[in-house]
Length: 386
Image (cartoon, rainbow, N blue to C red):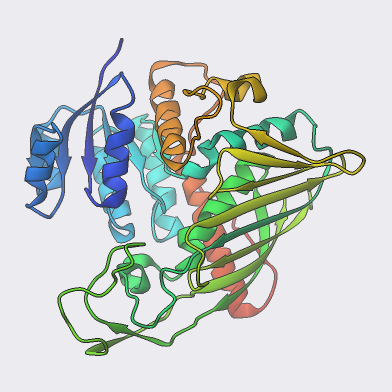
């Protein structure tokens, strides 16, 4: 078995999830990790990662690596992805690929020049039931799609005292809710239908013009106030959106809607996808991920459970547990990572990871939404330029 020497850059929440997923893949050996926080060295020691660096360029220069996972904050993605490619390594990057699509186009060209495989972590497409919807669509179980609905609802920025680096446009980008969680809707829809979103009409909502900074918090921690600073000691201007409402059009003209928000009390990670066809409908909810609702006109509706005997042949190979054992977010992440490493060792695989070109196109959809909100018009997604 071919062994891949792998490193992870960025040891926050998502970096640790990547490491856990990588440990479930026999062909992977995690040989190094990098983080600007020197205190993470002890964490690496506790988790059997021998080589720790605070400088990722030093790690890339020192270690003989095959693949590097970039799990850093958004504003660092472009520079680090570029650096990894220039050290002739394959790249598995967190989303967004970059803050600007022009930077993404440059990375796509560089990856082609270096002949390196790339991936962007849009992990929801790797959930068993999302894959099952895709399989049902391509085998015409749904019939012709009449419309699609998606939503991603959160509440972790509900209060004006909630703060995170994503709020700062220089770190998170011009868009927040659309870029952060709407992007998952874009990728999941495009994966399931095998069509691109080509036009959007978007309206943004900003709940607070200013937020009261009381120390940097952690995403979804429920504790966005740290350092014992009193609330209101510093106000930060908010330029990006807390919520958005999007109409979109697919390549074949099918219309759909997307609703995203980070200020909906009680909703944590409420991603939902509903696809309505002329034969049947399918609805999947991320917070109940191992079940698929299938709607019918002339007979009883179904709830399909993620057991191997219930799924299509193409999806069944990703089932690791017997029926009755629930699968979820971490399994989807592992599936995506597994697919990527299979692509490195096998020439012909039926499934593939979203590549840098896919991540770049999602960035273009986000930019089209930003433009549409400003102009109050339908806006076409720019064609690729790489």
